[in-house]
View 1 (cartoon, helix red, strand yellow):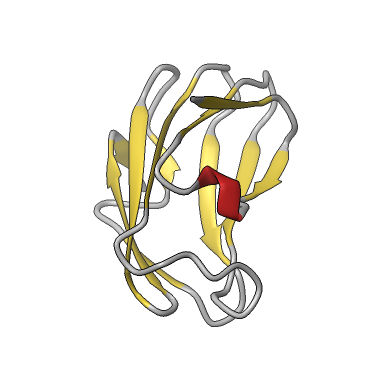
View 2 (cartoon, rainbow, N blue to C red):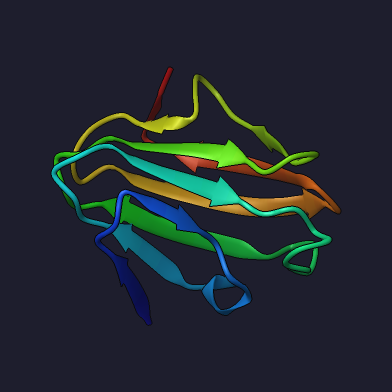
Length: 100
């Protein structure tokens, strides 16, 4: 299933667990990974998706959330794919076609 997002901001919800979330906007998009106290994703949860629009997608962690990444928290280009995996209570790894 695909959760198709067209807004310039989005915060993941429990229903996104183990699904594909796409972002399609001409303007920049900010995506927030929520704290475990707000949305209790199980450790091991994966969320994957794609930047369909020209607006660059940037990921950020809510207060207390660490998002590990190399080399940065942005999708590198339109049609770039990404993935997130929860590895601890408030710790995630972001992977895919990323840029600083």
